[in-house]
Amino acid sequence: MSPLFAAAVLETASSTLVAAVATFFACFIIVPILFGLMRMLGFYAIVQERRCLVYVLFGKVVAVLDEPGLHFLWLKMTWRAPIINWLGRCYEIDLRLDQEYLRSQPVNSEEGAPMGIGIWYEMFISDPVAYLFKNTDPRGSLAANVSNSTVRCLSNMPLASMMANRHTMSQTVRGEVSPQSHDWGYRLGSVYIRKVHFRDAGMIRQIESKVVNRLRQVTSAIKQDGTNQVNIITSTADRQAAIEFAKAAAMRPEIVGAALNEISQDSEVAEAMFAVLETQKILDGKASITLVPRNSPLLAGLLAAQSDSAPVARPPTAPPQSVVYTVGPQAKSLK
Image (cartoon, rainbow, N blue to C red; front, side):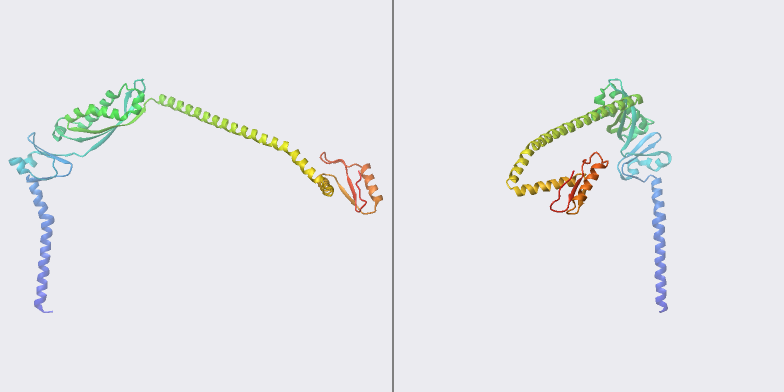
């Protein structure tokens, strides 16, 4: 690298550094100081959105700036602009919409019930000068005015209307408060009756007791009606079932007789069926059965004589008999 090129690079870097430092001081130190001095001398003022600046000099309002943006004070105050920040005073007022809620304002209904009304309302500053100098506490005065208007306008109303017609009550209170509040620099916005309640604890308990008793009566009535309906349905079903069972019991002998008549036309089928029925009846019973070998009449007689001479205690449901069968063509039953 040649010495001339290195010297040129160093000179460029030094000049760039000097320019950066100068720009930094100019942008972050000199310019803010210069603008601050200009504001102190009353050259200009900046008004933010929904803000208002009120300048007072020697007890008089000199200028009111309520439009957002940049304002040149020398054009509005002439010779008073340089001394307004030294000998005068600047009030910054918030013009944004504000809200407040007043809880349980005491009101009596037409029936004499002690009620409480919760009222919610919006407000904003409409006249900055009147807000500053006509009332020392305009916000508190507006709250007191709304409370007094609520008590004055909504007292002695029927309880049913007080519990239901909240929109009408809100309009009544707003129409009563608005003209007087505007004289103090405040303008009332929306007004809404948010809550209407009873203030007497004893009355609240009585109403709760009545509601609970009424709910119990309604529940009992519904339950009783349901029970009656179930009983009606059950009795109707029982009656219909009894009718159908009676019809079936009346038809059974006819059906059985017709079947037996048809079976008795064939003697072999009838004998086989009765034999099967007799065997099934014996198997379903509780009698004891003893099988003896074929061609043993003596053994069968002994067993029969033993059963007759020594009866065995049986349960009440068992038949009082025993059956002895011999194995063979000469088999017969002995009682």
